[in-house]
Length: 92
Image 1 (cartoon, rainbow, N blue to C red):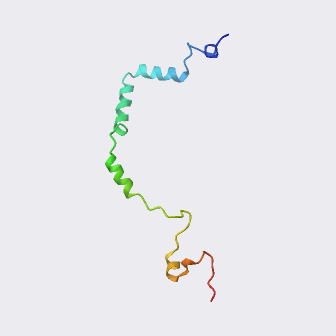
Image 2: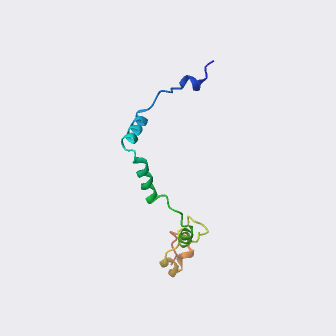
Image 3: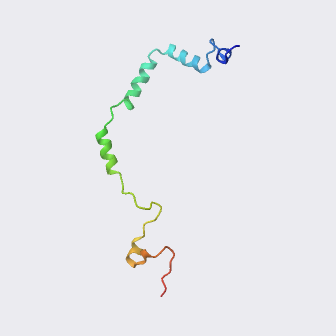
């Protein structure tokens, strides 16, 4: 019985993309070192953990007890209607 891995194996197959990349590397031997230098400019930097912690602490807000409840407006607070449900009409 032939195993499936052996049946589907194509040792001589190289995709067009692989052939293109290999040809590009052969044409420009310094390509990979230039790519690494470009990456080092933006990404390969040590983390600045102290500054990140400070920034995170400054950006945190207190979580309200019920997150889906809107805060009453200042006008409702001043009129004393803040204790009434929204849309409640005070009888006169």
